[in-house]
Length: 238
Image 1: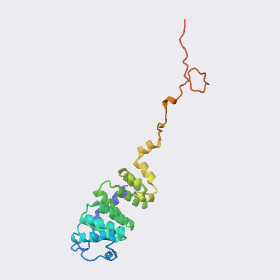
Image 2: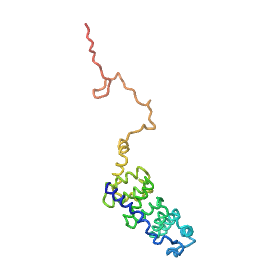
Image 3: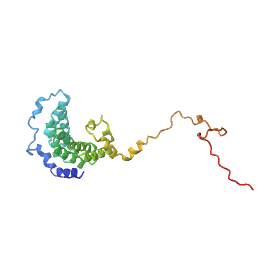
Image 4: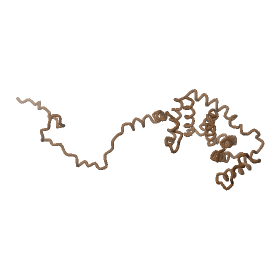
């Protein structure tokens, strides 16, 4: 884990430089001119209409981090991942503490194989939002892919402690991409794992105490049966 922390620390030092590459000219508003992808948008399509609405908002205020982040999500859905990444970068440029955009930036970078940049983005997410379970899980995937199995297990375990729902494949489909989830579960819930493995039995709903036959104390049961113990009489008589 120390190696991971060292890499993460170094990455955070250059996070600012990595995030601002989309602003080659800070004095200009990039939304004042038509953007390439707008030629493919149809105003009658609800998703395209939402993109055009956000572009209009950013034309008036290009420093709105929340709108940058929303536009990035729309562009990713529309099939423009590079433009989506640019919007997430602009979001954190506008507000470096805006952790949702840092997380989304990590996802887009990881998706195109830019793992160093993804680690930076996830690290910033956790810097501004300590205990962000999804970011911890995504970091775990990166470490597992890099062959750092123990680091991955620790990250997964932390993620599951913060959010149990990440174990649900419907909520988190990428859980299927890991081969060490079972080890992370043991790390995350050692006490719960032990207690659950005991598998105690409850009383059946139709159980009737009165139906239990009383023992027959007068019968001469065989020696291998359960019978009351006979206590020898050790009293001596004169």
